[in-house]
Every structure is written in C-alpha cells, then in structure tokens.
Length: 142
Image (cartoon, rainbow, N blue to C red):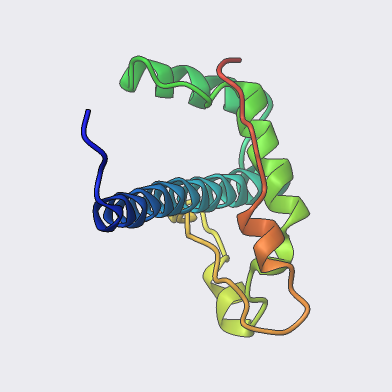
C-alpha cells in the first residue's frame, strides 16, 4: 500500500473530528429533549396527583393505556411515571412562579393542565449544565 499524503491524513482527521463532534451534539440534544419531556410529564402528574384531582390507581391506568396505545413503548411504567414526578419536584425551581404562571395553573373540572416544557431561567447561579447533564433513567417497565 502506498504511503498516504499528509494533506489527506489531515483531511481525514478534520472530517473525523467533525463527525464525532456532531454525534456528541446529537446525543446531548436528545438527552436535553428527553429531560424536558420527563420534566413536563412530571409536572403534569405532580399537579394532578398532589392536588387531589387524581385518585389512587390513576398512574396504573395511564401507564396501561400508554402501553396499549403505543405498543413497544418503554420507560412509562408506573415506577417511571412516579420517578418523573420526583424529578419535576426536585427541579421545580425551573418553573416561573410569576402571577401569570400561577394563574395558568388554576384547574377546574372542565379544564386540563397542559404538559409544558420548562422555562429555563436566565439567572446566575442556576445549575443549568448540571440539569442538562443529568442522567435520568426512567426504566423500562412497571
């Protein structure tokens, strides 16, 4: 095999670095989106279950129906849903506690509480990198 010209080796290294960086960014962004989803679902579950809108056994019903509606869905068993609620409650400081946001949370029997993404704070001292870097495993089943 002939010796490869150094300029081609440099091109390979540059392309390889770009590929690896892109793959890393894709994984990081996917993880960030997943954390936002878990946070939003946890918020929804927390607000409905802690306020007494839902009774005992509701998470079992929700989990079972999700499995029926989305065959092959993993990570949304009862334990995982409870973990999402814990996750939200541990990071609830992400929520904007302004009067407008609190008014949005008011619930009547005819209204639904929406699953919303967190509004990430823009203030010093908030551990945003730690939040986005969390490894939060919801599990695969019940």
